[in-house]
Length: 491
Image 1 (cartoon, rainbow, N blue to C red):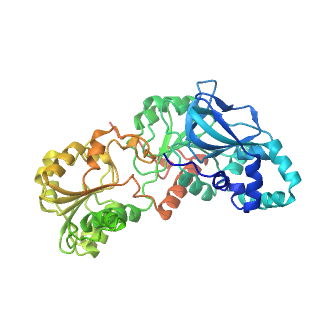
Image 2: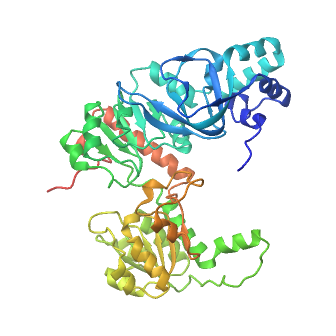
Image 3: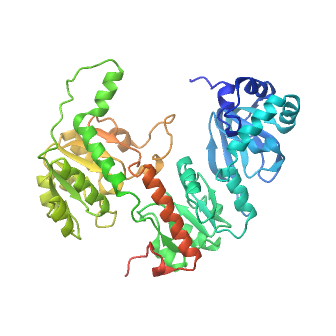
């Protein structure tokens, strides 16, 4: 078991204390108190005044919120090293959530009275904290932004579900329409939908579950817009949205270069065994045995789906000197002319390609487009790349192909049952998905956690387009008037 971080290191993670010198940190350490909370014990309650800051040393502390008298909903879980209640040190405040120990939790605490006495007795500490506080409390920080959003009822309120720190950071930085943004770590589900009370819009991602029951509840809570911060929308019941009068908008393209470049990175890593070579060298093994790759130049690459991402990949692979085959229900003549792509039926693409990369949307027609029959048609030892949607591949068929050698390499940024694992830290738990666990045992397979989109440029584009979609809605545009509207299929 790893040792808990020293208190000084934990204190320096608190924004307003991050720049304090060693003397100031030692003064704070002397006033901290270590408390052990029993399973189920409450550290503080939502809506009640609190004057304490908490730093988790070990164990877990659940963050619970209650909406309209319903049962409290767990919206986050604080782990070792995480902090809560910093601003309570600067004045009594009503807690915005309940904190409850899950199992035994060891927690450092500091209350406002002790903190005030420190500031009064030690002018050096007071000056240091004031200087750090002035740097920390910029208008864009989450604390100040939340206070402003609660104080100004005229601003359009958006609830972000399945949020991560990088999501909150970029949306606050790009919030040029001055919307009121609230971020929840919890995914949008039937159990958490009550968190949307009081918001006109919800912003969701690929693993939020916006089914018919959730849509109906959103309508009852007064939500009018579902703003997807992604291109895919197969997790939203569009027919239910239409029945209940909710508009849906998406980000049709944020950075096709980001996803295409990630697909190319998977190809290069698998081909030249970069992942294996890196691990070997770190262990002092400089052998080259088993690391032989092949030239991409002259190989045939098949691209399934030639939208913006597929087009970007075609140009990248053309630069490597690959022969390019493609399949799409809407062939692009310009791609034929500029990149030398030849459109062919899927069966021919499967049979002729050394590398196959998937860039098609997930529809009933494309679900498991890569199944046992498709794999059987492919060249033996083919490289298969998927940065689009997990369910394009029948993973059990892929496993069989890997075991028999029919599939020589697989690079996956998506997985059809990813919602239980991707975007979360599961390193301290057993992976109970037998298919995923088996998949990751192959040394010719690379799995990344749906991160192909994760570049600074893509995140900025996602935030800009999402907030522009919301702004259009605020201005009264509805239905077909919305630039990036998503509608239910006719019939």
